Length: 213
Image (cartoon, rainbow, N blue to C red; front, top):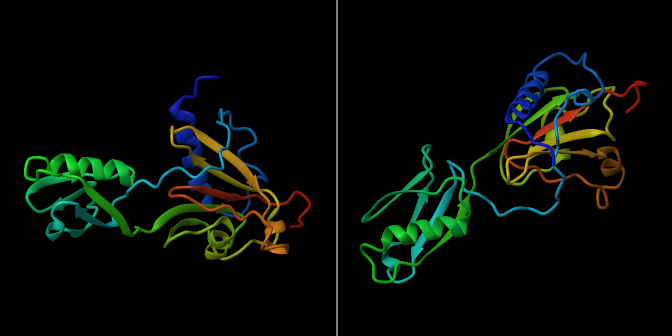
């Protein structure tokens, strides 16, 4: 597999975000001439990783009286009774519970804890291309590609709705890319592929070459 440099990926994401704030005079596919080695798309959803602003419920198994609801702070840590702040951001719920349990070992004989996510921070995605209001969007909860386009004001008159481009990073940090047919989703909502979005996804709506959606 070819070596993937971080610089092209960063440049690509920057270009797409900038294009989201530019005029609608754009090429049909801005990724066509960008030399980036994309990894294979994997439809499997990876475990959720905690993010600053998330709210979680922590319950020590042997000391339920110490149970607390805590918010993940901007530095990625949570504060709990009797122990120093614990880093939980960018960790799965299971890994975060293990980290908190390790911190409680000095004060509890049985230090196992359970963690439940009670509220997630808004998901920021970038929507660009032929939409009415391109830019960065803050989205509460689970949002799919079609909902993101609607929140960006909807498709422009010349949008290629069957060739919407989604770029994201997979759990290894590699860039992955797929093309989504939102025209089919609009025609058949139950059987279409609207594709759930993840934090920091880039969604790009190209313009149709012949001016038709």
